[in-house]
Length: 111
Image 1 (cartoon, rainbow, N blue to C red):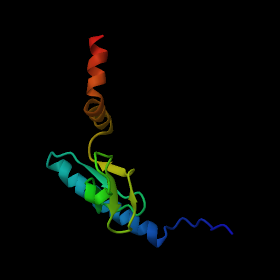
Image 2: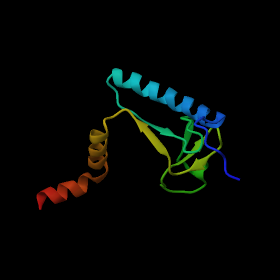
Image 3: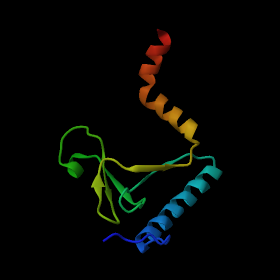
């Protein structure tokens, strides 16, 4: 049986919304101070309480791997997550492109 949509949020959705509002408030305060930030958010419970796992002890592997994340609130574990940022979208995308693909951009401009 399908749930009827009443236009009201469930208690879980309200808790997630409160967490996101807290993070958004923190990002606004940082922006007022002139600092830009990207805060990782758990895709499951929308909490900002994540631990980054990168070492041999954390992951159980030797070598360099894409970091994994663990949520302290819901126990979610994974490598893909959501980021909240206080940067303007256009400048954020350009900064990320230059940061990650600077070698390719330099090669293309020299050709």
